[in-house]
Image (cartoon, rainbow, N blue to C red):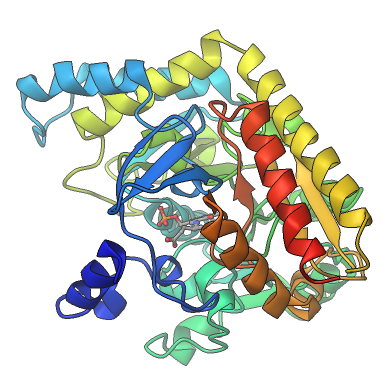
Length: 427
Ligand code: KE4
């Protein structure tokens, strides 16, 4: 029995499903989760000391690799000044000013402790600002586990195929309207059916929770125009895309202006951090300026802030990182495309920047339905074959792969080679 198996058995005695976040449990891919002990750069090491090339990177935060030197040193130094004050600090101003210097359309920004908190706060703000209750989300997009978002959600909700999450009252879910991703007409219909009632349209500008699904040409621009015309708050959920697709995130890369934007993952460098921000006229409704209440004991925590400020500063001062990430992911894309084309298994590869996913599908994967129709049983076999060979992919076909800048071409060559041997074993 591996140490991970022993630890998993023990974990289940005290933690629901043995994990603190469902998607880690390998429930959809089968088998027992691997318990990690440490990680450095592009590699994780499990409880038995086995090395894995990491394509999860903590679901996004480790964009420069694990235990990134400057982040480690910054935390080590800061921790002696206490781990929390519950009072404002200069470091929080530095974080807010740094984010404002990197992204467009953010006049004010509030720190929170997770992407979920950022997304739920942004929706409450949009509702408070407009006086409207309904929101439009897209099938397969995941915005954290707040009640309003657990309607046709992606990530773990899709992985476990939970159609209706128990505990989410119908009185809440009825205000969450859904449309297929990339279907502008469906959004126009929802708006026409709910005139003057929609507070916000919320979207992952590049979807990453049903695999990676790029926005179709004109889709985001169309949503922007609809929001402007109807007085609807347009919210970009950049928890995954923020500071990954570009220093300015999807707003910069795709040249679309959001009214509010949420962040997470990268901005904490692995520490628990989320944030929501946007136009002053909207953000001024947040307490203590306005009456839309939102709070957090550990929001702006100094250790989380120093980690995030250090990582974001590295990204801001070294724009070549984004070129390198792009080149590495393109190299992986080209290699996978070539090796998969040599087999007779239908597949599609979706990619935007350093977000990439492989779908064993003969149809283009442009929305949640297509992602669900793919041969995901085959993906599960692929996942385990790669894992057995020391390559850790996200344990679900409904997740994007994350590339870190510590990944080398040798790691990528290995990934491509093992993919080839997986296919060879099938043909
Ligand atoms: P957290 O509350 O997990 O920090 O963030 C929620 C969230 C919000 N918005 C987007 C676009 C997200 O991708 C996420 C979280 N992503 C998943 C991975 N697809 C987190 C992994 C997990 O749930 O363990």
